[in-house]
Image (tube, rainbow, N blue to C red; front, side, top):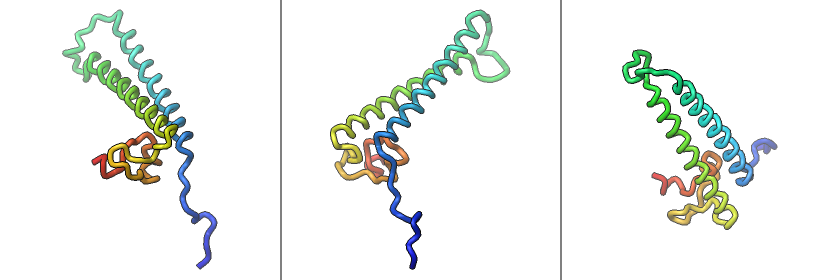
Length: 122
């Protein structure tokens, strides 16, 4: 059987660059959410509406709260990234913080900031 050069072992990207990419994406997402939140607040400051009884759908307050929750979530994700960067710095990246076993490269590729192996995440 002939060995195909593209059939070599999969080498995941450098963890530092994956975490940097993830951080950049989350920061961009957070900036867009903050802008949307600000737009909603600005649009409602000069309008006296009874949005609780708006037949068009969700209330403005509900939309604001949804975006605020998403902004909070980006903060949690950034904290997870910072913790993963600290584990990388300490030489513990890729080791489950719960059981101490290795986290599979496939899991780290999918979730670069994950602190746990699949078994412990369940």
